[in-house]
Length: 111
Ligand code: SF4
Image (tube, rainbow, N blue to C red; front, side, top):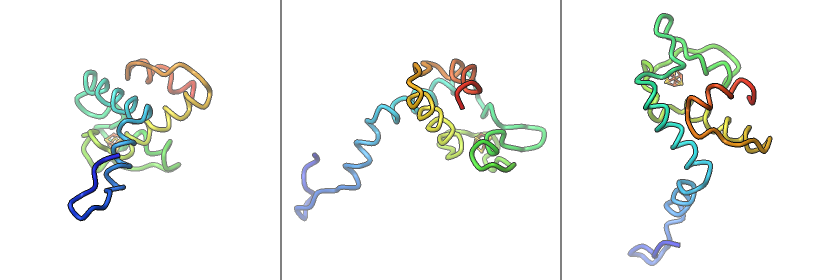
């Protein structure tokens, strides 16, 4: 637990964020994001011709455009995709991919 702030109260919000950051899910999602950046400058799910987000249907069940021009750093849809993948792998007790490319190759099997 962190030290109390100057008024003597604990910052529970900070504490929660810290423990979330250190959770296995958060660590894996961050590792996948880092790995994706090694392979892709722009989001691999951004259709440059139409501007569509190819992950949008899997997250929202409808089609949608990318409003970020393919910049996927901190994109909530991309992060949700990684979180869903983590949940699917762990729920089925499958070994988690160690690399984004490995995840892409297996995602259609698991999700
Ligand atoms: S909205 Fe996010 S996930 Fe979808 S194409 Fe754009 S950057 Fe990628």
